[in-house]
Image (cartoon, rainbow, N blue to C red; front, side):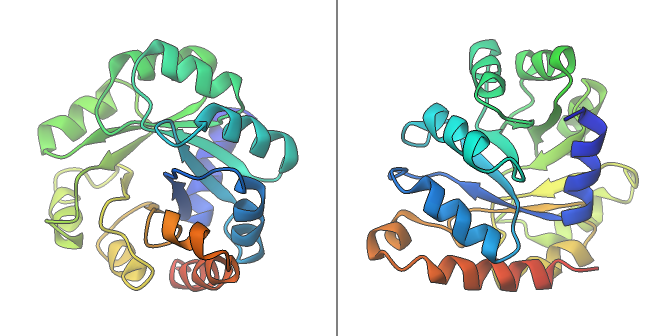
Amino acid sequence: MAKEPVIQRILSERVFAVLRLRQTERIESIVEALMVGGLTTIEITMNSHRAEESLYRIAKEFPAVLLGAGTVMGVDSATRAIECGAKFLVSPVTDLDMLAVAQEVGVASMAGALTPTEAWQATQAGSDFVKLFPLAPLGPRYIRALRGPFPEMRFVPTNGVTVENVAEWFAAGASAVGVGTPLVSDSDIEAGDLTVLTARAKQIVESAKP
């Protein structure tokens, strides 16, 4: 998939799952539960258990999923993520090596930033989206403030986004949001009832509608 369709799909779906898990043995069942709930864009962080294997398994089993890799830093991490099937790369920092690999290969990128200077530098370095991180202590109002000088910048919060407050982030000007532990946690996997993931996904997708 070319980069521009990936960007447009993220902007259209507006919400994606961020999976950072210690237990990935049931990764197919987890993804299936989210898809039933309407979430089809999914990020696997590279510090998850057997992250590369999980990316490969999802890419093979669920071609309809728009698959991303998170916590990507450095050339090696970026390259391995893409080789395993990732169509977009996410980093908690503005990692120039990650951005260079993404641009060379032609995959979408979300570099991490927090301050106005960092957000500008990430965009100037070629990041397609700016992942604002860590945002939980600042809340949606911070995005509203940043959009004053940067109305065209695509801001994507992940930290601090919950099932209940998704709509608040869009009201503040987020282009998309990533939902992590409030959507899927290791305790959910240990409990064994994945229907709760479907219910949360449905609620998030509904809340994300414009």
